Length: 90
Image (cartoon, rainbow, N blue to C red; front, side, top):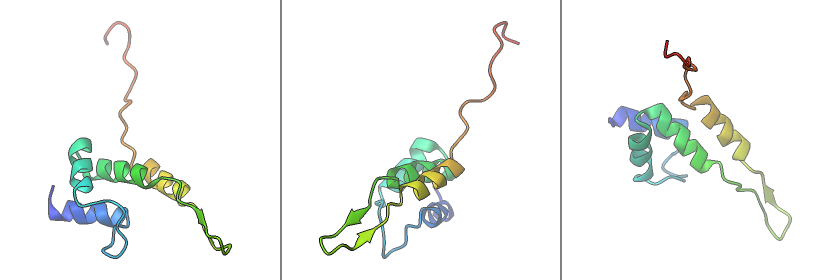
């Protein structure tokens, strides 16, 4: 994985220095597993799509970001289905 690909993955997953969710070890592992930068973004977005809403005792609440990350994952989802094969092999 090149530095440009790593920067691309970090940018798409909004992994800035001040607000990291995924570790430096996870991003190359996702790239290796998926075989591409777009596949790594898909896996990273799925990892970030956890339920993370919170309500504090004083009534302050932060919304859930799950739908946002699932939408990002859907945009980068690899197509592994392909066409259906005929029974006769043609």
